[in-house]
Image 1 (cartoon, rainbow, N blue to C red):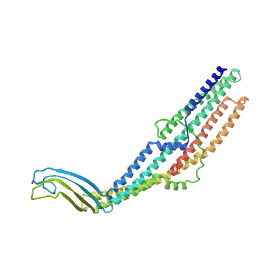
Image 2 (spheres, rainbow, N blue to C red):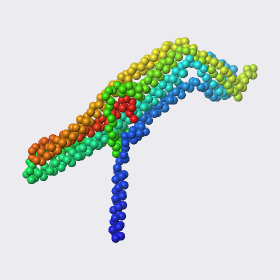
Image 3 (cartoon, rainbow, N blue to C red):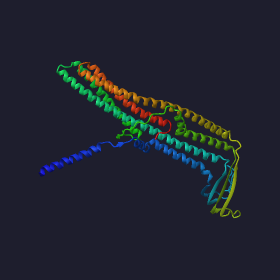
Image 4 (cartoon, helix red, strand yellow):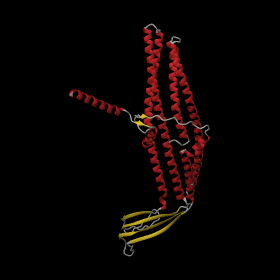
Length: 435
């Protein structure tokens, strides 16, 4: 009795361990929404775009810096032969003497005739464009995830069809081989069904290869250098696309982040053009200095105070600099006009992309019903061919052709389903509505 109980406990422990091992080997489940969230979190392109947004925001701070005073502390020591004078160089206080001093310099821009406000506005528009580029990058990553996700589901479904096809054709091959042994079927029938089995096995090999490629693409779309090892959850078919693409084009013009980015870039280019025009206007600044000189070696008849302070204003009026400012102004104007044309070009591209994606979605959606009817008819034809062959009313060629038609119909139906889901994702991408 004790031995029997021990054996039961051992079997139960082995079963639990086997169950745990099976659970450990089962890949985790992953929905499309979870895959998208994982890609947004991990993909290097999105992280790089986020860094670019941070860089653009700092450009606003850089261009806004002249609004605030520039304060610096200075410590200076010098040595010179007493009572000597500087004989060459720029005009300056030329007397040399030994000294050590320290102080503070405050420099404040009063006005540059609007150049700084225009530069700040240009930087703000450029930062907005960069933020829209981040959204565009996120859309590109999400589209790649959707495509790879449905490619994996498609490949897995084709593998299942191929496995069922191999099993069905192998069953028929076994039956025909047995009938041939009993002199009820010819050896030709055996050869033809064996050919069918080999074709089904080749289909299975190609389908399994397709899964490996699709898993590698999904791993890349998720921001990883490893193939995706997940149990993907099938998504329900979305509703059909609208009858006309006109409303979709309007949505795309309003929603696409690429267009929003180009609009902001255009505004930034025109603000920079205004800033370059302001180069020809006066600039007013104020400087204040103050400090002390704890040590100085000067003649007795020329005493210098131990403390100093001073304030000055400077007005800089550009007169001539070899056409530098006019060339910069014209270059900025050309860049702004270029931004106009780039926006127009992208608007036309978006309209074209929407029409192409809409046409592809319509075609893929229509294929679903057609291939479903094809599948029903192929299944019915196979049943009839099987019955006729069993009754000796048809040849093995008719039966194998019916099997081939059924396999083709199953694959076409699966392709239509997943192609429409992919095309629907592309359509939502083109109108700026991919989530």
